[in-house]
Length: 329
View 1: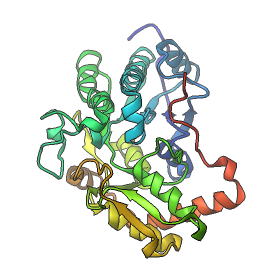
View 2 (view 1 turned 180 degrees about the horizontal axis):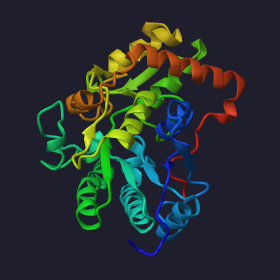
View 3 (view 1 turned 90 degrees about the vertical axis):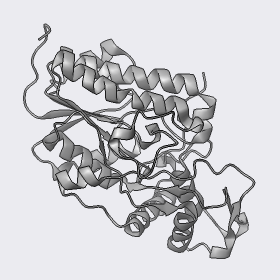
View 4 (view 1 turned 135 degrees about the vertical axis):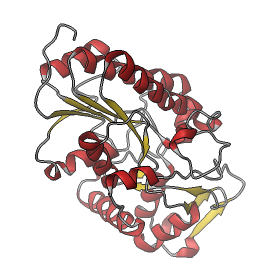
């Protein structure tokens, strides 16, 4: 063990706590009274700085880490900043892992991404397919940064004996997402547009023909998955933890229209615009068998998120996250 104090207790550093998943972990903290959650937001800690990361882990006597922070967003973001997305996500991975080794952290849980899966393999994606071909071009740098976590997990387990595991989330949505119009994810963008619609705004026009199939998952279900893994999962092979319930973009859009009380005839699809990958769905069979966890029905999750957004829009519009995911330099 390197010369540093050995972590004890159940003090969990959670990264990415201003994001949709990290904030859900904190919101449900009462569900896990045996764990003390220590938020490590970007304003307090730059995870690309290895020295600062180690100092934070050491100063807060961290015993476990749940690493959720990432630079991620919609297609426009990955198109504009591929180099920065690759470099900073990879740097965060190794800052966290090296700090864990040097500070005697007992366990690390890391978030990969279903976007890391190859584009031309049979679906639903299973965990053993992760390296069987290139990812979709639309987000290649983010995909490779997240895919690199899998060999990093194996390497740090083999060389350092670090208890580190990975989970593969898919299509997270919920409260406290970033709804910035220029670079948000497709689901966040739809939630924002339907919640802010009024008759004078005209039709809601959605890129593509609505037929691409996606998998979206309630952030609170995802939070439960990561905390389950912290307590119970020990294997090196990452687990898919998405809801694994395929739906078309059109199905989600019309469900949101009904929930947000937008007339169905005010929703249009522009088939001349980019539609993205045709299908992206994972299999969560291994995870469900091991954990026994269940997922919130999609409509109930969307209803809760829409209610939250409209409440924030009415009472605290300034608190809705709309800032660019990558600040211009």
